[in-house]
Image 1: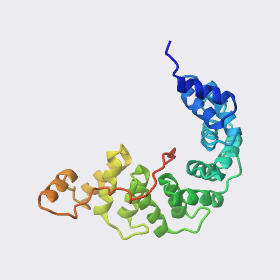
Image 2: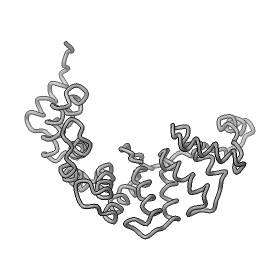
Image 3: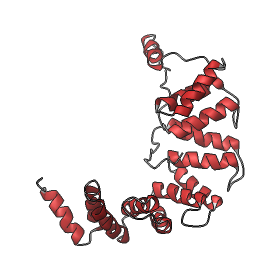
Length: 251
């Protein structure tokens, strides 16, 4: 039987005394071992106002993980966490509104929550805003703005953003057609395991629309040896200070 450290014992004591932060920490530690017990502690912490517990409880309820799926209850907890500024909860509340899960479908309000999270650096929300803008759902159709949001997400390494940006570049949607840059973003997404991106890249090259780029690492190495101080990584890294949020990517 594994020994329980003093820190874990003290966390459990504080949790039983009603400390929401300790209750959340205890729930996190229990989740891999006893999900039912973890959920009970998440509930206590969420009721005590802990934003992380509220967001996690909402996720479990929305997806029916460890508890029966309850979209309405999930929305209630997402609202509380979103109101406290949790970016993941803001994005996921937007998703619930877009899909009409647990409340009436409302793409306009969904766009508002997506945009709020997107402005704070959520790559997932940036993609979601872009998709609404491309379709004109809940917002006026604006392909140029959609591409701008997709580019922000793609630069952060979001696979869906990279793929969607590449599609826009390859088709000239919201931006001048650029098969060469499209191929780069298709390749970036394909390297992360996107099979559609790999197939699109193959088709683009087969059609002769884009030449296969040289190995990026070799190019960087050669540039460095030649004293080229302008050589850049592809895809480029996030701009300094850009927040990267870990969320459930629905796309």
